[in-house]
Length: 291
Image: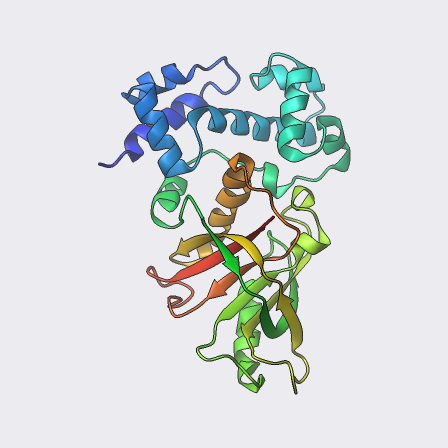
């Protein structure tokens, strides 16, 4: 059964009343289902409960107001459905690891705080293009040889980095067979996730798995992915939609999971399932480090 129309109705009802005292039972009635049934489908398809979505959207709306208006914190809190500045501050700091006042002072529109409204295309993406609940795995230590480039989330240059790498990749000795490609995000070593924004410059390594670094020529760099626990999400389809997958991981899953992230680097893994940048059936795995 396709529950997307009901979910769309629920989201429209919520978004029209974000600043009001919304009851989840009212949301369910607007969508034509019982609270229990709708909440179960909401969690299964969107990765969080109705109550969680309401709270995270209110916080995201408040975060924008902190940066782009001169309103007082109490005014922002009340406009976004919080009963007091104290309850708002507690919820804000719990999610973003920083107080509303500090967030405003930093003037940084962080990626993790940018939970946007779930439009129809986002619902389709969550339904068809990403695994909502990850698989938890132990990943062994792995050697990677590749090239390093710089990018931001806003001005994404990763496609060009991979083109450059693929042009010279045959020069790498001791490649593992069958080879696996890795896109290693070094942002988490350079910036906390709670400090990352679409404007922050970070480095990425595009490379392949190797058995040894012996004889590795310039301009290639050596990377060792340490062994450890990872949450693995699978992204299906064009890599143009990859930002939506990361938006779900950082803006929904991370803020709802009981798992705690480690400070190891996250990475994308490309294997035989990767069929091309825009292939609708292509699959890659996203590894998020856990403690």
